[in-house]
Structure formats: structure tokens, C-alpha cells
Image (cartoon, rainbow, N blue to C red; front, top):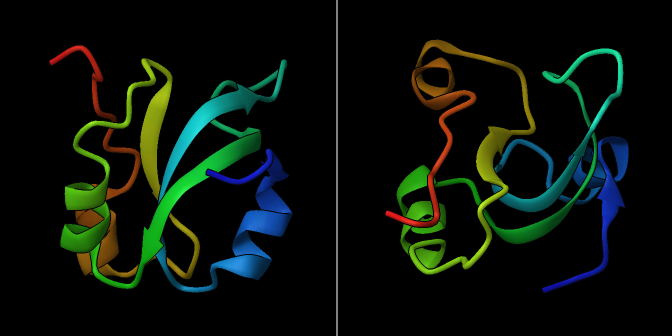
Length: 85
């Protein structure tokens, strides 16, 4: 795992990719906005990221897409994983 990055840094380092995020810090005024997080896994293929994230070990974990939203990406946007399951 790497250090905590801002959402802008994540988008710059992992363009047009699915990212598995953990230890997420949300904006205090809007819980839908990510301020920073640790990138656990990243790939253009969502299935690869999901497979790598099976045992992430964080309760504060979710998947995000760093590129433009398209119908395929929208299907999984904001899909959260409960690490305890």
C-alpha cells in the first residue's frame, strides 16, 4: 500500500482506472466528496481491482472510477464493499 493521496493526486496517478480506496477521508460538508485515501489497487478492468481487493481488511473501503463517467462505469460507481462480509 502507498501513502494517503488527495483525490486529485489519485486521478492524476491512475487516469481512467478503477481504484480500490481505503482509509478514506471525506469532505466535512459533503460526504460524497473524497478528500484523500490510500489506493489499495488500480486497473482499467474493474474485475481485476475487485479480485485484488477481496481481503482489503478496511471497513472504510470503496471503489471509484477516475475517468469520465460512461454507462459501463456508472454501473459500479460508488459501489461500496463491506470488508466484514
